[in-house]
Image 1 (cartoon, rainbow, N blue to C red):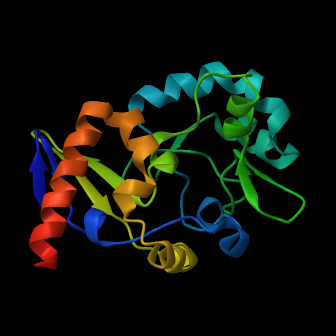
Image 2: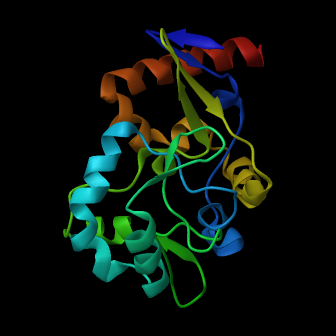
Length: 194
């Protein structure tokens, strides 16, 4: 682990390579899993407030799930905030394009200018998972078999996780943090490669 301010960063974020390959995985990360996407507490009110604006971008099944469960729910195993799911399958905010690839209804509304919030930060930052502790924040690389095609493409293109996730890392922590992270990654690479 490498420390920057109050953040502990897994070295896997520098060493692992990753580039989403939606044409292969079809966005399986939005469909697979036991619960919806993790949510920060401050995102709950945002989801409540934008629901009417994003509704036109959602599937009828997603709208029904959100109307029945609310715009967010909790994971029964640990009480963490998560997005609701459609019948224990896909995230309720998911839509499907003509090729069967999942898209985020929130992000589509954002791209159209209907809302000014892109999507939950946990989705934007994936495959980095953030865990908040009382005195520090841990940033870890999350390995999931549904993302094997992203790992293959990342290796082909030689794109480390932190570079692939530059935009969401800046969204979450700011440009100054990302610049320091990049410098640390370069130092780590020089030491690791020598």
